Image (spheres, helix red, strand yellow):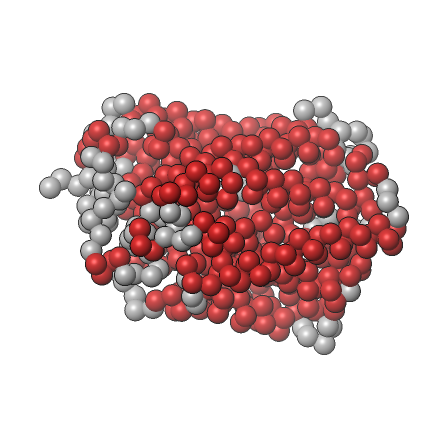
Length: 451
């Protein structure tokens, strides 16, 4: 357990700059309801359908199943460590990379959460504008932000679990009703089982699908920041169920199959996107389709806004505290999200996410190497020292592994084609290998300042 907490720090309800103490941990059911908000993004529906269209249904399903297994294994390790230590991504990054490197990791995490909040919020805003044309998109976007921001005025321990627990049955019911209405309107067709390019499904397309899902390994960071609220006695449950394979089976496989079915059943959807899936639901369900989308997007946005606010606070605290608190940081995130929703920047955001994804994969690989190879305790002791005053500006090992791996992965991504499909795996293998090898030669001064 990370130690050295003062009474004042332990009473900090944000825990953006301190480890979560035992008394602030959540019951397993409450943390499950809060976390499972992440499984209902329309994004997962679109990705599953897109993989089937580009690589064939069979390849898409194989790639998704392999991704579910991989996510389950990695998050079992990360969640157990986060539960044991109470550390957030921002605090653990200080151990891995030093204060400056931690700032970059926190910035990437914060920006990614904001980007997803923009995407998911825009889907709701487009839905409002479509069903109620008198409400312009800018006004609809403002409405979405105005009701999203107050949802995180409380903390993850207070009511996000209750809010998302209430919405979960409506999400499941919405999926079932949408499928039933599609069959009732268009009849059942097995076309969705044979989706793919006109030239036929490429051999080995499952690998392309698997690699694509590595692009959203930021969910490993999401896991880390939520898992730290878990109780030690519930670590097994959280590792193998809450943050493990069952969760990703719902998030990726169920959502993906739903997307494939909708694409193969509902005609004239046009180019596949989150908006086209939204329009299909509105076409089938009318105002109830908008209600279903509101449930799915609002659930995922509680996580996006919460993580963006907490990491923005942690990032700014590296340069000195500001007298904001949870409400202030939530409002700051809301302003940023609204401005991005109004700007025509989606193409640029997607590019930014692609590049950031390389850094995220490298972060996960370094984190896994640090956790699996118990060298830190030999050098420093059983307590993890994360206080900014006690860690150096740079950890040469962590920074080297992170940046060398990213420096290989980004050019592979830019070259495209087969090279792009190797970018994320190559980044992960290289980052893990460099950090693991370097740990054998690591010095105490890399993790702690002299004193």
